[in-house]
Image (tube, rainbow, N blue to C red):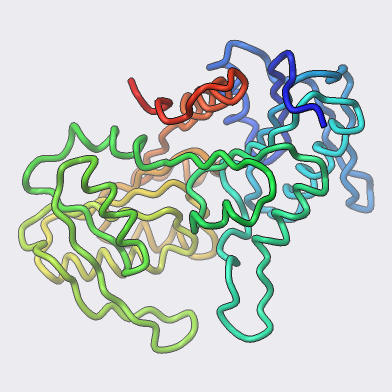
Length: 317
């Protein structure tokens, strides 16, 4: 197996072309040509017009909605590059779909995140680069190197100049306490936790707020927001417990189903989200949504991988 290429080359599928172009711009190289289309029956068809022989290929493709189409695009692009004798192939997945299916929660449940890891390896990926996996231990599902980047430094940088002693970082549930604690340490803020329980499937009942939020400006921190039920009910609980204002932030804005309606009606003043998933115009134009770029961090990570240098310094200004 060839483990290194002689030139960086950026390829992109259809899932998040704007991010791929922003990353390429930060690297001062173009996005390489790739014809990504479909046959009339829905089969994905990919052609690489230019040679990739001996090159260090980085395929930027989030496996967001439509998840299965975008995942298949990525697999086929990896296979095309492998068969064209690329030097090394890195699947850059800013958002890794199926990451929530990382364990057997009930008997006979699949562990789909592990299945996806195996398929990516079988397709020919030499390494994976991703951001804020739903559970960090998913890195262990891969038998190839995984570069796990974090969105918290980018979000913390945005909020640090806004915050003062009246702000408190809030975990929207007990499972996110570690993430919120890490974020609080970055911005030198206190920590609170929204304690909730689920009396039945797809129902969330907020029970209690642990910590002092009376008269405080609260910042709720999560890795992803899907239907926005947890974050919006958490915001309502904070207001009921005396919070002055509520902000929220996350790395991945999935925003499926009733998410935008819930966010718009919620007491959340602003929701900051990274551009790991390409947002529809309705989301981009929503006055409550602030989209921050992850392109420079990804570009620095790609440069570090290509030059065999440390990833630990990529968030430094």
